[in-house]
Image (cartoon, rainbow over all chains, first blue to last red; front, side, top):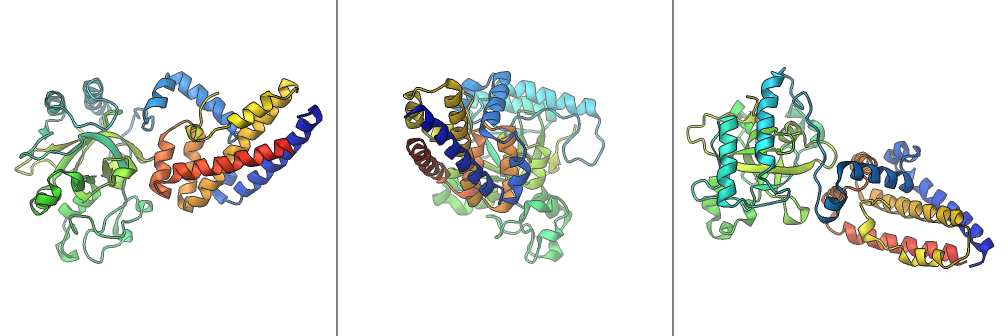
Length: 294
Length: 106
């Protein structure tokens, strides 16, 4: 290629770049980003390099998925109540420091040895008896990626407008895999309200014995109480199983209601993160659903 | 060069070899490479926005702006556009690379 040809080629490339930029600006959301100089490949690469180098992540990023980077906030996300900050940080910090050194940062089925240690840390810091195996049942993963789910219909005729929080999450088109939370609006109590508010999703469909024992398993898992802990920030929620999924191809193992995800501080960006999910052994139904604030 | 979330899906080696083989001031070659990088970026983002439903555009662009390297972006796209998004990015990148080679050759 002759010297003058490269200059001509650069002119052509500039024209092509402008054409593509104009195409991008037809998408209304991109106007905000593409009129700023920061959203061009060169600047993004610089930014990428700075962030990765600063966090020492370049090696890790090439070999494994990285959940959203979260900082420990000084307030509980989404909470409208004032909380004793010192107490919360104490529980959260204990969970974080205890669990972080034990847990691999990838979807995992815990070994009996790890399970025992994890259960002990949870009990000592929350007073909740959490179990990896309960009544001979165990999930395929105790550590896995959780995704942001939509609201669920709680009873026939329910609507998104009747959900009082995070309506922007939308509502799933059908009922959950375990049916409505209440058989009709007349029998919809605060218990069912809380069950939908703090529901979670686990992959019952991939259990080894699901096809053989699905009638028994469906009853056993329906609205089963679980504890979900975000080991990155120590935030934890007691939730109940309200639906089955997600599909394997999503790369996720669990799902969380909009409120559950908000409390775990996983409701921003990709709205996904690695969490610990264990059964709650609560035969007398003494442990309430919702965030663990002690 | 620091990574962008789709870098593992595209190959610019043919373009880079082409530019390396010519005798030209390095700053001009650098300018061309920057433009090429940006054309591929804009082309891929445009293709993704066309496949992604409007309500997800802002979230997607925010993540790209804040964490351009993050492999979770691909997971997010798989969830919201379908499991074949990586193939779509590869195809779009191949198309862009061919156009760029045409611009450089003509």
